[in-house]
Length: 124
Image (tube, rainbow, N blue to C red; front, side, top):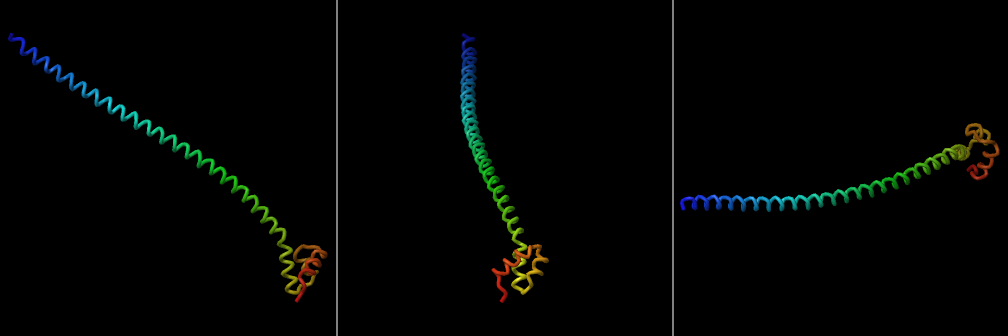
């Protein structure tokens, strides 16, 4: 019977070790589940960020396309303004009392163009 108490002690130690191992495995599985849930949330967040980035990219492309159209329109308008510059200058010269010949030579317009402008801008 002397061997029974050490055997019970060894069995008790084994039982305590087994319970502690079971508890450790339980904690490990719990942490693993939490890690998997966190990983899934992060993946969903990453998908949302990627979708947002795609949306921003498409919006940026639309804005760039509109910008290029506006730049083209602005260039067309500037060219129109440059084309009308001699006529504006001629009108001012006529208002100041310059002769049609002087206006034609200084603005690079034909005599007929200057005479037509002179009819629309009578001298005061």
